Image (cartoon, rainbow, N blue to C red):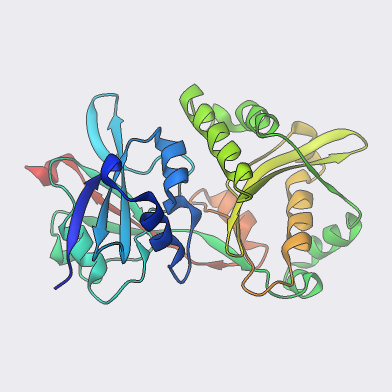
Length: 297
């Protein structure tokens, strides 16, 4: 019989937790302890299955500054579970979610039987990924004609390394207000970038043309998967297709390696979703599992 334990952050064995995340057939950096520490300021707990065979992070939050909940922290698309999963494990973990708080957890897989936890609801979310294990010419062969033309036109563009602060500044100026982000979010994003760069688990890049900044972004990666986590274009970059040009160079850099994948990280917004789909990726998807306040009553 599988054993599930609820552990506070202070009781979690960090090395064993991270080993469980990395043992997953398709690991994602969102589940690593240093990532969770950065995006939650250490305010997370976890469910541990069979002595760290699999783990499920439970970030602690306060909605409307009052209501405690387990939910998705900023810049963290999916929360697992991570590890070596067996049939029924997801349902078992969901049955062991603490019942005292509402839940809004983005999971990698749908529950086998949502009826196992009748107070929970589940809906699918969009996430496009592009296979980069092919050579760059083969990757671009799947693009629409116009994108192929653009990739050839700007083939000599060069990525430049930049600082986390430069990415955060551009992201804040161009997208922060529309995305509803506050100072707290930007502090955590910059902390996350520094942690990832220090571990060689991500890069900050920018793209210029004639000395003018077009776009910049932060791209974490783990075992071949590069994630489009936080990227933005300048006003000039919007006119000069700066984001596409930056992505072309990232694809060129990462293509041709076994298991290489580019993760667009979303999106539910129709315009953004259609833009990502043009690159020929597939919707890998994930699932949002929720238990609202009335489900506790």
